[in-house]
Structure formats: structure tokens, C-alpha cells
Image 1: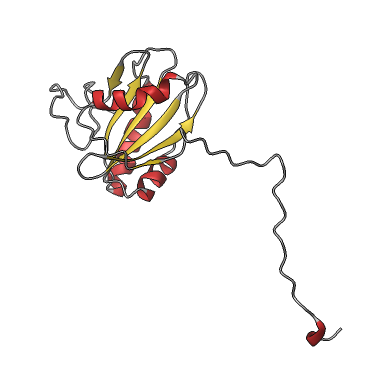
Image 2 (image 1 turned 90 degrees about the vertical axis):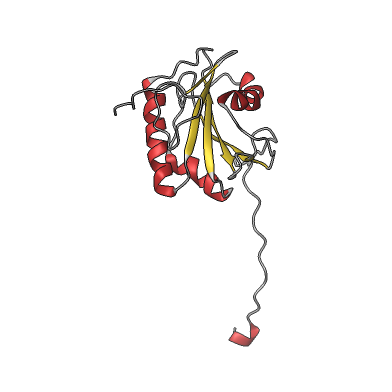
Length: 176
């Protein structure tokens, strides 16, 4: 066979095996432009509580905000176990960069119903605040959702955040 006789036929991409599926549920997909303005941790609670009401494991979401504190995106960062959730700055800020966020607010649930922050919650918040400073995407708050109540780490005398919240009590900075 000479080079002139060789014909190149377009190939079809083989279908994906049945065990590989990409599932995109509307409730889990990143949401763009809800336009909801966030002025307080209570606003965060009202916005994300319906999402967390049906969760039986810890889930962390990231609310991405524009420069006017309006929500431009919501993204599920991690889904964990009954009492833990693995979170890495790479996953948090990849979405924030993609949405061109001016800042972010983190929220996660405690399926036990008790929104008291654990030492791990505080440690991951410190890590994410430090990463946000490097990327110039501030973490404004980390809200933990319980059954009918919430805890805001920005208001919890644990203020690793770049800007103090106006209604925050005067607290000593947390030591690492």
C-alpha cells in the first residue's frame, strides 16, 4: 500500500462504560447570579439552610460574592461523613477563581444539630483564610449550620478574617 492509497477515516469516540457516569443534579450544580445580597451571617443561614436540611452527612459549600456582597455563585466543595468533611484550599478557591469572586463565605452543616465549631473547623478556617490572603480572595465568614441555629466564626471571638465584622464583639485574636 502506498501513501497515496492510505485514507484516514474519522474515528468515533467509543461510548463511556456504564460504570462511568457524570451526574449533575440541579441542586448541586454551581448556581450563578442569584443576586442575593449577604449582609450578615443570618442572611447566609436563610440562604443555605434549605440545602442543608436534607443532608445526613457533613457538606461544605462556598458562596462566591461580587464586590457588592451579592452571591454570584454557590458551589459544593466537599461531601464528607457523618461528623467530618475533607476540605482543601485548592477545591475552594478553584471555584472562586472560576466565578471571578471578590470574596467568599464558607458554610457547612453539622448533622448532629449542634453548630458549635470543632477544633478542626477552626483549623481549616485558618488555613482557608491564609490561602485567601495569598490569592487576594478574602474569606469573609465561615458559618456552621445546626438544626435550627447557626454559628458564625467571624462573630465567635475567633476572628481570623481580613475585615472585622461590624457587629462583632471586641475579642482578642485567636492564637494558632
